[in-house]
Image (cartoon, rainbow, N blue to C red; front, side):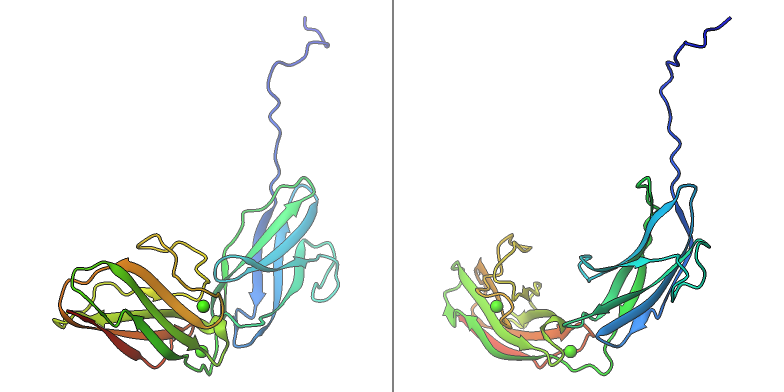
Length: 253
Ligand SMILES: [Ca+2]
Ligand SMILES: [Ca+2]
């Protein structure tokens, strides 16, 4: 005999129904434009009702630029309502085009709040034709310094790009010791207002104003050889094109 009133001591193990995106598409996958219009579609299988299907488009640092909702309502570009195929258009306009491979992610969410496995796909943003960046106004200090003496070294240059400031991927210096041996370090200059700690010194760039096209790198160090240290600063844009190269030197006595 057993009692109907007896309550189960078992821990209730809820059955979770996660939605699944069984197929998806997005087109086009490459843009040579500031304006993106991507038709996106996802086929979703789910036990529970689907609350939303979204496509998220990211910048190159994986910050969200735009989220587009896909619908299964039969309204263009969706072809049939209620067939589990969700469709929509993701629109985005760059104020300054970021050339590069951008992540795009599809995600389905049920009314229970459970989500599908996130996916990672790529939208390739290109620029053809591209114009190279230009550097001007190089400043490297000190002009001269005693050997093996600690001092602040400051590298500054103005870097611009006809395609906009966000097209500059990197500004950096290379150099040679007086003996002609290349410097092992090739440090980047930044236009970040000195916001952030940077490797390898865990100090800021020394830049005073962010986004004014003046790039700076300041650090504390010393030189170990006498003679002229020669430095070369250039910029590279997001399409990989290189600017003119400007040079300056520090005399070590
Ligand atoms: Ca450019
Ligand atoms: Ca600056």
